[in-house]
Image 1 (cartoon, helix red, strand yellow):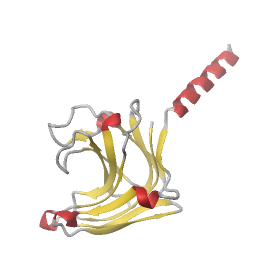
Image 2: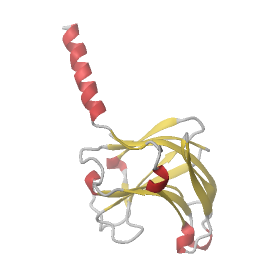
Image 3: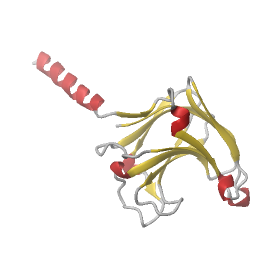
Length: 176
């Protein structure tokens, strides 16, 4: 009986591990997959940068809500969406204890601010943050009430919505 239970746990564990989809490990070529966007594209005055190195991607800068601004962001586009059976986005992060936002844009997005969003706090030590896709909030009624992972066309990590100094690392990004 114990042997059977151990075997079943191994099968279930293997099935669960197989459902993870690594989106980014920030290896060779990551600089071409990610782009920095600041609110200056809309007249804002926030400033920042994103650097990719051995530990991952480092987003730093000053977020200012002056002049209707309030964000710095890195974004990656996807041609084929995320795994249709994905239930969560998992990030390996560390930072300065501030709140950061993940934005998911889907095929349904018409305007630049149409997205689904979720927030997290990045503490000083590396940790995994699990954001359930069912917990992402939609920004507009034109978007479906439920987020369909296969419709996701981009993921963005942003320092957003308040005046503060951004300092966040992301070491890995995956869906489960």
